Image 1 (tube, helix red, strand yellow):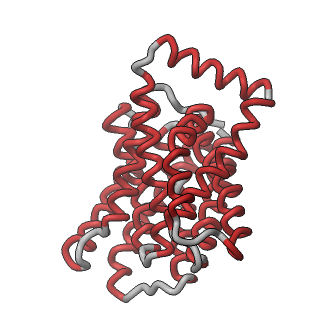
Image 2 (image 1 turned 180 degrees about the horizontal axis):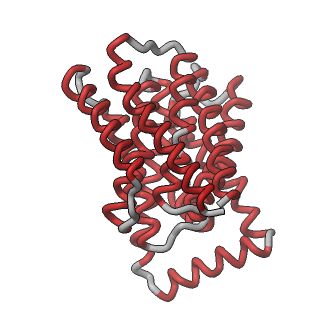
Length: 286
């Protein structure tokens, strides 16, 4: 439990750093940045599974499962496509004025994960969690009725990631070895993006390299936390990332207006309630 909590918090901080770095890039397209992130992530994590005995054993066990049941490869392809879209969006959004919409998606993600945990895995909801879901629904209702609806990046994040994690859990593809295979499947497309890009990294090579390194570490920690924690608890701990992304979005120049308070305030209150509820639950287990 403690390792899962720490992994989730550190991953959130690293994702916010990647978001800021991506938003600062000007001389390279988002598809090229995405391509470099995928290729560098694979370059960093592949040697780990080749040289570290425990990781190599984990990868061989996963490949053995796929060899015994080739149909599992179908789930791997689906998971790879789902996470690939999310990784692409994380590069696209801050470079194209969707940083706030992305942060809202990550605000809603923990709450959607709680609902998915209840619906798909029969995880029981506490009274605090139920109240939090209602509060979040109020914020979403305001956004839908009075603020022009939810932007497509918001929907893609808060609905896409739960499908990804639920699919991985159903297929028992929750290890970092599975994520490595997902990245491997994305690599041909990533290479194509790099080779067909209008501009190379040039002077922005260092920021692009840092995105690749931080992305590899962050995703390893994030998915590691997902495998160590229940879906509901994992969702509760994800509240840190949207706060950091919101701060990053404002730092990049996107502006909040007064009416946004009626969207964000109930959702933030819901996340605070979830955090308090999760803290009480963890103390009761000691």
